[in-house]
Length: 254
Image 1 (cartoon, rainbow, N blue to C red):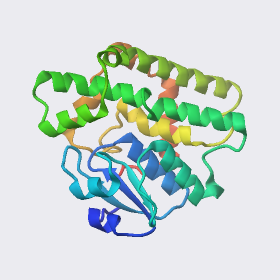
Image 2 (cartoon, one colour):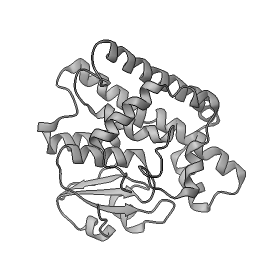
Image 3 (cartoon, one colour):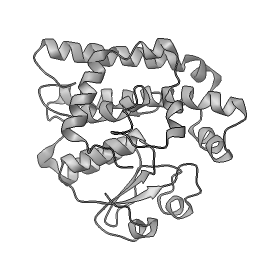
């Protein structure tokens, strides 16, 4: 994948994607993998983490990536809005079941991974808070952490919430395996399989040959409470490895 300039994405047509540059931001990596799975052609531009990104912010009205745009439609950045757009553009390779119960499960589990107060939201709190508190974090990093927003109660509960979600995801996979399925929901691949695979990097970062990111940033991903680390059940990592090998471009493109 070769990046184009931000202005090329802003002024372009077709499907466009803005990805965090040099970092395995899971929201963006899941989006990219789902686009590729669906056979959707897209152009991509980089979002410089901690940078100003003035053109992209003015265009999308959002201080972060991923950003997705389709033709002249308003750019979007929420994980569920992006998923619904991809489903509209390529319904033949659906990642949302038609069965209403299964559909609700996929959307609910996906929110628990991607959404407000979910797994990644809480992991980000416990990743960023120590660096901000140290007084050594770059100004751009501090501003980024402030934009995410949280309370002292949220910070105090972040590890426990991560553990609860990891345990629920592992229990779900084990129940599915007992029923003869290798997927989170039903008997076919869904969005939640992509989301867990991408977001697993927040808990067990892939090695450099599969996730080529700046070495100085890797310790931020590995630092976590031992109680959280021990909640990453091997069944979760086996699922991640299988989905990554089958449905993600490796080495990851950032």
